[in-house]
Image (tube, rainbow, N blue to C red; front, side, top):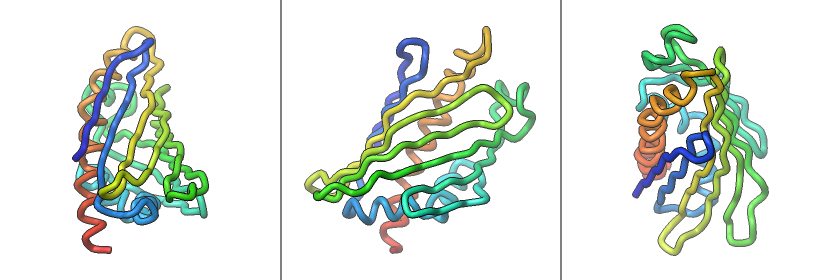
Length: 169
């Protein structure tokens, strides 16, 4: 089950996503720390990843995707971004908290959020909360609104790619 809500709040676009995986929190964090999983997630949205850097508590990678028409005016045909996912140490029940930041290159925009992975009785729940902001005078809010469907699709693809990854690992 994947649930994504994108709403406007205090001028920023709020992102709230919830997914469920039939796996332990450790398995889900291992998946979310695997560059190959992210590559599959982004491939499903017609994007590519490169330059992954994996540390004990973080994954950093570059993402490139076809720019939506409203954004192409600012960045050209390809939108590139730097994604950083950082994890805190696990709690005694296996739950973990982290931060997720996606910073598009070439435009004043950013997604800042928190990730929470926790056991939920039948597996593991992943919850993302955060904001997406485009700081371009006059058109920033329109660009945020145009990004909404792309953000929703990315979270939906995480659920699908996660289900597939967990079956194969």
